Amino acid sequence: VVDKVDRADKKSPAVQKLQDISRTELLGREEDGHEGVVVRVSHSSLNYKDGLVLMGKPGVVKSWPMVPGIDFAGEVEESRSSKFAVGDKVVLTGYGVGERRWGGYAQLASAKASWLTP
Image (cartoon, rainbow, N blue to C red; front, side, top):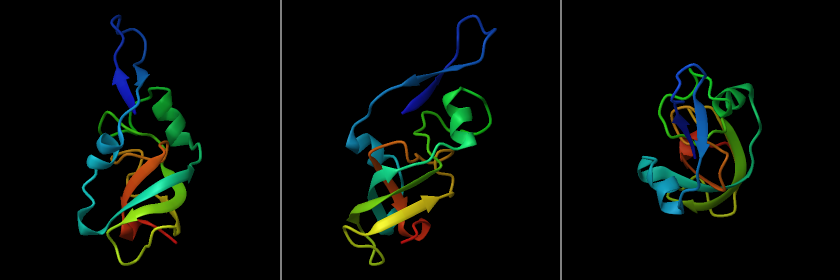
């Protein structure tokens, strides 16, 4: 998780504080409804937006703390959706991931089934 920490002198931009969180904290934050899918992330790219977040630049992240990564690919670990089964390979990009919703720079990610592409 990346969190925003303002410097005391206010003359330099905010810096980021990195911290580990538990599986429960990571997956419990999302409100995926009855079709939630848990993905074991294998890949996430480094996009311009992710770079801005990690450098503490304003504008990308809408809610702190945040797990960056505006996309991810991986394998379904748990599914409450009939669309995906455990072991399916999926990709997600967009839907506010890494901006308003926790993103792909984690071992696990939670998403609505409708956001995922097989």
